[in-house]
Length: 268
Image (cartoon, rainbow, N blue to C red; front, side):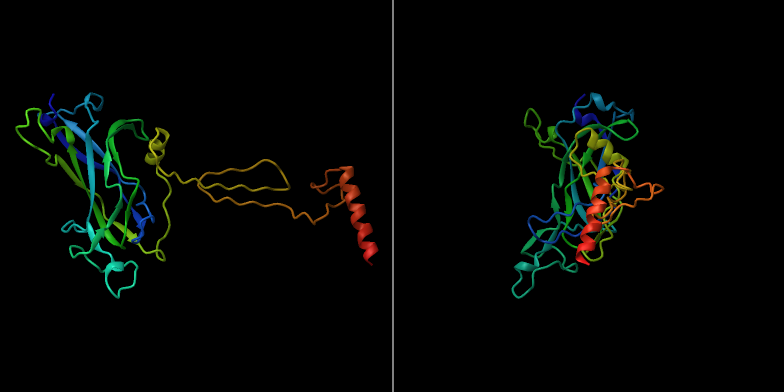
């Protein structure tokens, strides 16, 4: 069936929650967390859902744009304070767009291609993933996602040029913090982990706890905690008490103890 006969609907499968402002540097990136994910639903004109496996998604794209919290104004451009004479370089949240010289408020890749993936519940779907979006100034925003099938840009007979947006959806509002106020990144979601396993380039945060007790080589690795290590200082001599669990009854240890005692007596 021609793509123009399909009906499209977008749904935000993973909402953005927060981000740390990235400022105006070219290399500074502070991705929105968690990475926004949009799912595409396709149906026939009568409303019957179309199977994802039967759809050619190779030229489908979704574009992300930054809007105000109330979804009334776009915030795609902002004045770069470093270009204003006498203005110190740095982020200014009160500066609004549309007056040159300007730069993009939303940094990174604003367009995502389609991926046929399985989610964390093993259900297949067509997804658009935005893992490299950063916002230059603090505030509360929403993201507007617009879907286009590029196959419809030019018809085979060149009789018409479509290029219209076939579906749109807004994200929930999210907060962009300054560096001092940023509360930190959230835990990686089950959906992000499922996509990463399938080859999508996503940053998956894993924290571990490693506690070394009594020089026991066994570790206690626990996901989503912080790496910590505990070890016995090298200058502490093990006790000769047989009830001490740290006593390994090693003759070398006894020899080291005697040498240490002889050094102490010599110093006296």
